[in-house]
Length: 81
Image (cartoon, rainbow, N blue to C red; front, side, top):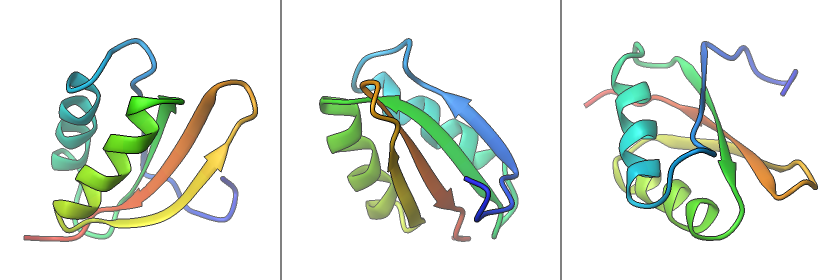
């Protein structure tokens, strides 16, 4: 994650879909346009659904990192309305 200047981080490994996206969306809403959020999420439904939903909201997916432990880090740039 050193490639990006991360503004904030949210860990959603303790919740299940659809709450995963809700928590990620709330974290993004608290940031300024252009800020970068790192989202720590589980394999399976979260890694399939959260990136897609965030992209549909208009934000930019910068990177998806597989941590090789059943979790991923999704790096997202907030794009204004």
